Each structure stands twice: as C-alpha cells, then as structure tokens.
Image 1 (cartoon, rainbow, N blue to C red):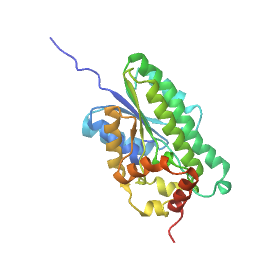
Image 2 (spheres, rainbow, N blue to C red; image 1 turned 120 degrees about the vertical axis):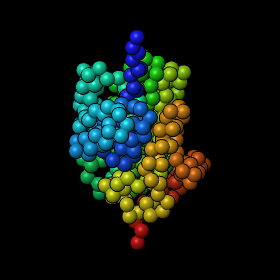
Image 3 (cartoon, one colour; image 1 turned 90 degrees about the vertical axis):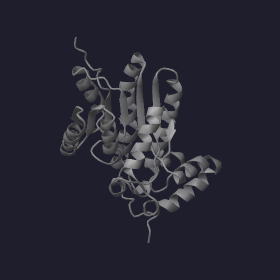
Image 4 (cartoon, helix red, strand yellow; image 1 turned 60 degrees about the vertical axis):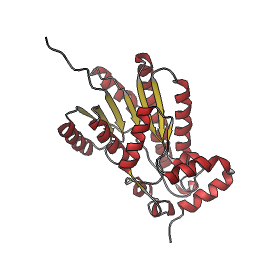
Length: 265
C-alpha cells in the first residue's frame, strides 16, 4: 500500500526579486512552501527560483508582471486558476516610494506609486481572500511601514499609501476573525533593501541612523503572520515610535517626520 504526502502549501510573493520580498520567499521555502514569485525582473526571479528549488526541493513558479498595470492582478489569478494553483499565503510586498516636495514630483510618478502600493495590493487581496474564506484557511501578509503611523513631509504620498495599507489590514483582520483566515500588516522602519536608493531618500537622517537588515524584518514578519498577529513592528525603537505616534498632534508628528526626511548635510 502506497501513501501520498499531503500537498505543500503555496505562497505568492509580490516584489520577490529583492529585499524583504526575496527574504520572505527564502524563509517560506525553508518552511516547505511552494512559491509563486512575482515581480518585473524575470532574470532575478528565475535566479531566485532556481536557487530555492535546489536548496529546499520546493517548486517555484515565476510570473513576470508590472503590478502598476491595472490588468496584472487578474492576469496572475487567471494563470494560477488555469494551473490549478491555490494560494495559501499571499504576501503583498511590492511597493514604491518617491522623495521630494509633493508639488515637485511628477504626477505620473506618484500615481504609479498609488497604483502599486494601494490599488494592486487591494486588487490582489480581493482576488485571493474569497477563496481562502471558502476553504476556511489562509493568510495574508501586507507589507506596510512605520510610515503608516504618521504624516510624512517630503514623502507625502508614500506615507499616505502606507497609512492605507495599515488601516485596510487591521479592518480586514477584524472582518475575517474566526474564519480560519488571518491578515497581518508588517510595519518595518528604515530597512536596508535598496528601496531607499530607488526612492531617493538614502541620504536622509532616517537612513543614516539605525537601519535594520531585511532578513531580520522578513523573519519577524513571517513569524507574526504564522501566529496570526494583526500588526508586526520589528525593532524595539520602531515599536516605541509606533506606539507613541497616537499621543502627539499630527502637526507635530509631521514636523518630527520631516526632520528625519531632511538630507544629512
């Protein structure tokens, strides 16, 4: 008599080509998850997929997509449905930032940021949450930021999008309580991922101070997700800042945030 092993769970990770996304994919692979890796860079995704398959014996699917394209989430869901792939853990990690005075940043830049940080995250959750609820199991990890707790001059739109991610995540966690599905929001502070250089704020006081490494952030976020925690803020100082943000007037918080966003002379 032969027995078959139960199928491995599958995690979908957006923005998996580097930083926190790649580290989360690596941690999930070590826990035995098959993977669906999504990002714009096929070359980086393919290299990561090959590495994880060899190291951990999992199956990694590479899907190249630009999530600022409104049609991308449905295209991803369609491909997976056609292949019979069910997503047990959705990681909405892909994100962009922009740096500078709001009036000086090109509108297309900030609208693209909103399309990725807000619209795509919402759409992916809309597509994959209902099947999880129907199966009475599943997890969603939304990667937010400590920026979501405060207003952020010089990164105004980025901070606002992360406030949306945090608010949405907490609300959804409440809605799905008791269903077998959980929603977690990972809110890291300054983290060395390459995001800072891309956004243009790598020379600010924020990134010249204490910066966490992305693997530590990813580890904390995944552990919180598997526990079913609603909010995860890695790092003692980050937790202190987040916990006290609600005690000060928002105008004061904006002034404080701006000091961190000013470039170091």
